[in-house]
Length: 134
Image (cartoon, rainbow, N blue to C red; front, top):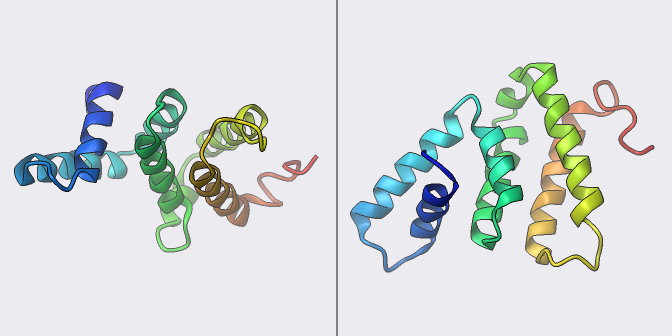
């Protein structure tokens, strides 16, 4: 995937029931490849922070939630510790910047973000993330 604009276009195509089926298949294939890429999680988190499009934010969070979920959590567990630490730091930074009740983030984005945090906590607390509640 070349960049954020192309990424956003692909996601919006997948959410558009009126889109050309061939274009939707191509967009889905491209997004599936990103999900499986070793650095896909990092791209998704960066795109989540950079995009103002709710569907894009939601897709990115859903992809990250599936990375850390019990079904496919092996991928998260297999990440090198510096990458997991980077993700944990990014999660805390977002909570501090955007997690408050009065921010402009839609509730469904905050809820999906909370699922991501809980998924990481289930894996990393207390051994790898002991000071999360400090």
